[in-house]
Length: 134
Image (cartoon, one colour):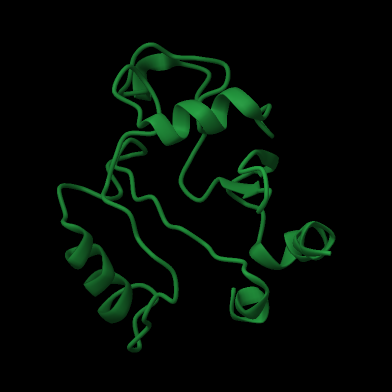
């Protein structure tokens, strides 16, 4: 993030509790405090905006995620073969699969150009960011 900040690049965090309730009913400030004091801890301060917690899947998904999931194919299928562990409805093939799924948005058009699975490291998309910022 810091590497590209002077070129107009930013990261925006969208907390969600739909995946094993990993972000329970916390406020945005409590989430930031958790980052600072627990994980990763050590006084970590996010250098990106954190939006209010919202749903990313199901009937109550935020308009942002309705747009994103409609614009890019998912990098992997839903993780659970059984719907017993999925807490939202309806279940769509374009649903976000887990925390830390990433979208790269074109700075001029606002359209998603790539989507990355939750296990993709930010460093793994550096070349895509570079290409987009040229």
